[in-house]
Every structure is written in structure tokens, then in C-alpha cells.
Image (cartoon, rainbow, N blue to C red; front, side, top):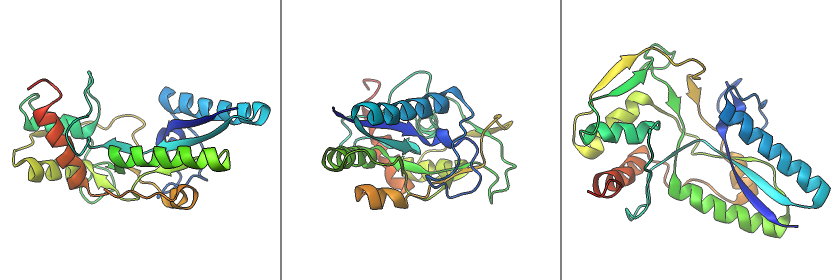
Length: 219
């Protein structure tokens, strides 16, 4: 019938019961983005059972970085992702970064996320397609590093990479923002033979910095 590698998201878990988040945790999205991703994954499974479509849903955690050669990167408005926003401050494209809450029960008080390099995501897709074509439908898998970094850690890493100050302001917490979203990334090793080869936050920010400082705005 055909083969589909579907880009899903960790938002399908909603507010996790525990961390690290395994694929077996309840699926309870709390925003339209997570709901629609979960709906499509269920439709693919149903269509596969009825018509033989082979598929796998890849649940991204926080995609970051850019093409290591600086040829492809992220540009969209309005920007909502933390690392590009932080780098915009370093480039004087915005005056400061807002940190939404610094009173979480985390050492520095700011939310923790699992950042994964886009080049690692691309490699996972190639492996996923090859595996689906040879083995048929696969269980949904997390794509992540299994490591967490706080908002303040991202700001400090960006400061170290760019050598520029990153002005930040503390703002109220955002509703529905879980304190920690870090994956159990082991199933991807078993199912796809994949693990992140660029887990370093500094590597991710360095590649993003190369792109944002040289290319995306025609500068």
C-alpha cells in the first residue's frame, strides 16, 4: 500500500506523569497541536489495519540547531523557539529574552527541556523509512537525547558560544507549561538502531548560531 514516516511530537503526552518520558506513558495532549498529532497517528494505525499502509510516528522533543554546514536553518515569524529567540538577542534583533517562570522545583528554577539536533532528526527519518520498508509498521518512538537543559542553561550556553551578552527578563509562568520534559530515548535504539550523535547543547547552539548570524536574513 505504501509507507509513511510521520512527524509527531512529545506534546502527545501532555503533562507527563513522570520523567524521563517513555512511549508507554498515557497520551493526554493539552493543546491543539498535540491533539492533532495524536489524531493523525491513530488514523495512520487504523488505515494500516484496514488497507495495509505501513507507518511509524516519530515523537520529536525540542528540535534545535541547523545544518552543520550552515546551508539550511530555521526562519519563521513569529518565532517561538527558545534557541533562535536567544540568538536574536545576541544579534541585537530583540532587546531581551523572556524567561517564563523561575520558581519551578529545579535547581535554577527554570523549565527543563530535551533538545535534539535537527541533523540527528534527519538521520532518524532515513533509518525509520528504511526500517518501515523492510519490516512494516513500527511502534511510535521518541526522538530525543535523554538529557535535559534548563532555560537558564540555554542562555548561558548561548553566551559562551557567541561571546555576547544575553539580556533576559523574568516573566510569569505560562499556563500548561510542564516543569520538565525529558525523554526516555531507549526505544529508538531498539527499533531503529538510532541514537543522537550530537547531544551537546553547545553543538546545537553553535550550528544554529552559524546559520542565524550568517544566512537566514540575507545578511
